[in-house]
Length: 467
Image (cartoon, rainbow, N blue to C red):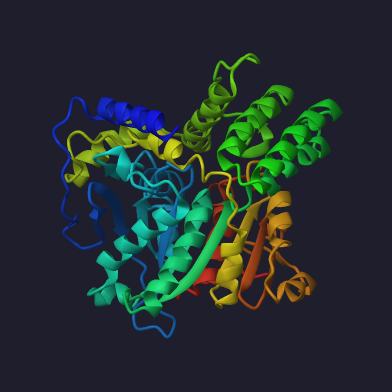
């Protein structure tokens, strides 16, 4: 099976590169005032990760609480943090290149990385360099952090927090363990603040099992649709238990199609809406492989399409990144297109896609690493119902104390309207964000900024509304 797949990946890669010059590593670059830096790190031979660092204009120096840096990890796998997280969610500018009022630069410096290699502006020169596991991605990210932090005193003074969205959560927990190990070994010089998991794909089994009952409860599926959904979800549960992760990915593709067909195309990023994605032209006669590929396309296209529907934009993200932004950055090789290898990234990781990462969360908690979980109320793909289910599978010795802790309401801007709830015990923290879907910073920007301040303890100049 591996040889045909490798041939297919190489064929696709050659197609992407046909009109360009040979790929080559690039050097770091930045703005004259030092507010932005970007560049490539060759994390392995022929594997190049692209990063972009913004320094906050509101940075508070000489504080007893050091100004933090947030490493943002996008999901997919294959979705671009440099593009999506930056220009559509938390960066300083939107896709119209207008200032974003709710940018997370108000509370932290921001480091965006197109992860894994092959995502966004990151690229591989040969498909053999694509990552096949979350651990391999973590190893690459750790190498990038070593290159950026070791020897850089300014960065070392700023504690690093990893904030992840969607599949990025699986990268975050494996990266967290890798970072702790590298710090203890004296190989990485940074202060690690912890991780935040935003609507993350930590336990695929618990999410797919939640979809049918949740959609039935909100009238999006009837009893027949719920039965079809539950039946496929149980197949996935069995496949995961038997370690058949590739087969589980195939069944997941079928399940997403069945749910779309029986719900009149519910939006997987907000179950109160119809899908914001273009029709994929699927038919009930499609094969398992075709269903999986369609679901992959649905994820990759849906990320940007859904977010674009939330804002008035005169330019597509693809045009922006392959146009004026590529020109600004100067160091993107001529034959590298933003998002040009994204499909290859997902294909390479399809055998890891349905693998749970609950044990990694447990290990981080046992090490004393701060773990924050936040979940949008109307998200479907990483539904709160599924998130709560996997949290209860933790073997962490303080879980019962966490369960018994009092849940506090969250307000914003002193309007006294309940925007969410918060619970915390020891180093585990959980935010329930009301009226938010998969993209919490977009749907509830004020609450997201408050949450970020609490996660990072950033010494912001302006106070954040408290409950």
